[in-house]
Image (cartoon, rainbow, N blue to C red; front, side, top):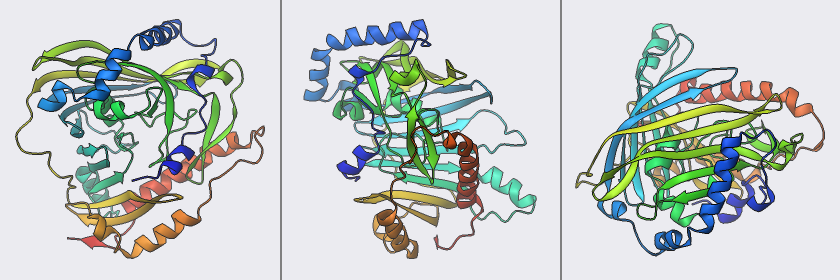
Length: 406
């Protein structure tokens, strides 16, 4: 498990929520929602105490939800995708399987299926790219693996490999996490445009200040507003680096994420979210604009089977990035290839790559940008992001396997 001291280093130096106010460019409806949440938070003590003192009825009974997620991306690179999903809650443990409901275009890779299994201890994510691998092999590219795997101790499944997982988790599976987390902060539930506009690097535990109300019976969120702290950030050397404050009025912070349950359905005596939305805002051309919208809708609920949640698995040969072990200086990121399953932790520590991964973790120093007022990172950002993207794809899709576990 990550050490507490290291987790605090990755909070991005956010200030207390009471010191932050939205800029003048904040949309009126979301400013109103933020103030309404603040008023509700002052009257929600009974519900919060109830959540701390005992498990909810839905957690005790467990449930399965089947539904869809519609993701719209706006701005300079518009995108529209719809996913079908099945999610299962089993107290503090959960699972999600999802599949995108459209064909890939010529310039993008779409996973055949994505699965995730998680708990308070961490998350296993597997993405099956069998169809894409077949296409690449037919074009003459010797791609050995058909899947991509991620193992992380971040209990929130926010990653760029499967952006739909975070909104599903927040809507239906976050009760256990929210009960034990500070009620004024949350690990970013999505990895897109939440860190001063930057995508989150893999395995980064990035906290956002927030206001939220939860359902007193299920422990699931009803409304959530996350606040950006007003700092520009960039990815340098694989690290998320805080630069300087944004120009006014956004230097004091702004509304970054808005989550809201629109409708409920009664299942097993409890109200569960029927429809919800998660929207991400960022600053573009000195204006606050919506950049992402996730619309989650449940088609049906049912009781979970008696059998426990299956162990996480991967299909075929997978390229895995595993960060479940950490040092005092951060995660030990191990790259390995395995067949049809993730490695056990004891197997992970015996890999030839493990010793080098530990050395890197212990010797890497956090990047501190020396000139807070400089504009140099703005010129570097696109080049760095492009280089990181090439390296990520190479490691996960094109690197020949050095260790294959049958």
